[in-house]
Length: 498
Image: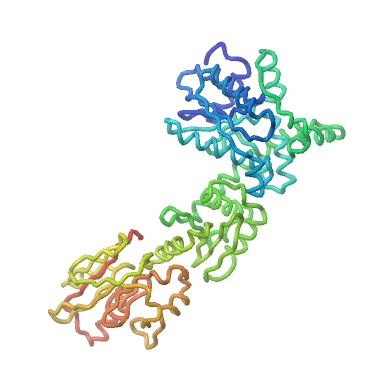
């Protein structure tokens, strides 16, 4: 490490190394122009002299709230230029967006800042990019209290953290006093946000009014006491988070990349872990936990842990939906329901397509279903000892040399009736799928093999004749009074599912 680093830069570097903050290709500095972000920029600018330090970029987000917003942007641009750091400014009409989104300006500004940072991160040439924001040690106390009175769990009390995904906070080891002393003693200029003196925003109220009042009656200074609590809870959270992540991996199955939770496995977990699994599912699907409240989490758990396999769904915040069917549950947006229910049905062993299908199948050849990658391969097997059973194979028996014809792969025939081999009764496919709790959105797309107006085979359910297992082979021979087929036509479906 360079001997000319300032004491504060050394502290930040040691802290960051312990947290692995700079193990990346590039760092984007969130540069508002205020003292905290300028301190962040100054420290990282010092550290960039270290060998293999990440490439630095600076981004300023103009919220267009204060009259001085344009001056702040100009200051940030000049700062970046003087330090030879590539710079980009983005502008948002936060008051208008706040009204449109139905959120407060403070929250809207935060959302848009991180969207802007993510946009720039996607544009730079480096691959592993992290975003540095200027939260410091004093922010811990304010954030803890704000989250506590919003109603939060451990995650809210142990916030902010040094690293959350690609967001890093290198200044968490420094107090506000250290930051201001460093800047003022070196004559480093910065912008003053006049709204910091106003109690209009929640954080300012804690900073300017509530903490001073608490200090009059508390044994310790509020920030010091909350810092101690933060450190203790952080250890607890790290343990619980690790255990919850292991539990999540055991509960979740990915269906073509989209995660679903096995509800029975979820029910076996401790209550504290269940809620974290639900929140982790939401986070993986939507990218953050911003819009999932405690009440939303409880509602989701109540549905996931309810009895029965029939499909059910409830509305969640911002047009999102929780849907549960056949022992699996997931979150999605309204436009994704049909697609995800088809994936779920495929996972259950059915062969499902989005489009209507009616395709003749010629024995001994392979057919590809239109608008899909699903293949139906048929071949003649003369040796019954070669029968290999699985959910996607069916064997039609041959008792002479004639090759059967007239097989059709089709779907959307819910009014047709199906009789399972060995049964004297039949059901319409509509009733059959309902009884088996097949998701309603998938039923029209389920492929069946039909011959002479009769449903012969439904992958995932069974066949009206022929062989799908060793047991059905024995039943066939018994029904034929011991007569052994001379061969079989093997139909096998390849759809990318196990």
